[in-house]
Length: 404
Image (cartoon, rainbow, N blue to C red; front, side):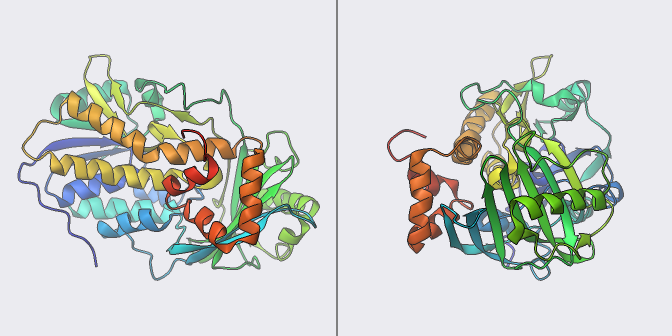
């Protein structure tokens, strides 16, 4: 059943810039509550649907429940259900190899399916959709006629409005070279996500997803830049990228290459490459005029996708913001309220950020011991895997004697 969003007693005018995972959910939730919402998005639904894949997102149970709350879990019957997560190391004698059971199924739905469908929901609810790239000058205009402006897109330099958190932004450049392709015809377990560490090269992930045409399998490389998994190049076709990734697998993790010879990309746009420099910013930003705006999602917490927290963080933050706005009914959405919400936002995603940053570094002796314990103890394996859904429960296991 869909949990109803309480109707607002005081309708507000709110502008959200960025129609991604967090921005769309917040916009739809606010419209369901009766608020006047303008959503500014740089591409129309048809361009998103026909474009290049944007993410390898895997949504875990808590985030899925929040989509369901808004009636946005539209693919529950068609998306493959990921029930287990296996973590192992490539090679004949891996130092760790365990499979943990998720307490609730995870799913991955291509955002080229999700976002156009959610944009349609938003417009059917009476939301105002503006298709245009937004810049700082546009935010000044939105702030002049809205009670609240939420920035859920860092394009056009908008992320620079939000101060950097130096303590939790330890990296000066990308730690991984990212590449993925969505495949049909790959021999894979459609109930399991596999994460394979390759010593000196990075990591490989394989998991089922839903994309154009139905179920597929995602092959994702988190490569050490310049290493043997860093093989995909911008400008390759989907087929070319699949071929170089398949050859790298055959050399470094031959067991994973089995069944990929006959596989093919799902469509011409079913591949991506890129690099991310992880960064944390304060969620309260300031325009040149002095007006305050609120950041959401990757604008303020941009994590490497190594442990799959980005889309989950955005969803959890969207719910936090929605609940906070609704709870403020009849009261001002002023700067003090925004400052308190920004602090709550960081508390919500802090564990995911600390964990992701740890995972980008060489494993400590303690982490190696935890992985070995999970290999021999199913309870430890299950606890570790549950951390993908709720990182707060994992951090004490990873950092038992120091503050996270």
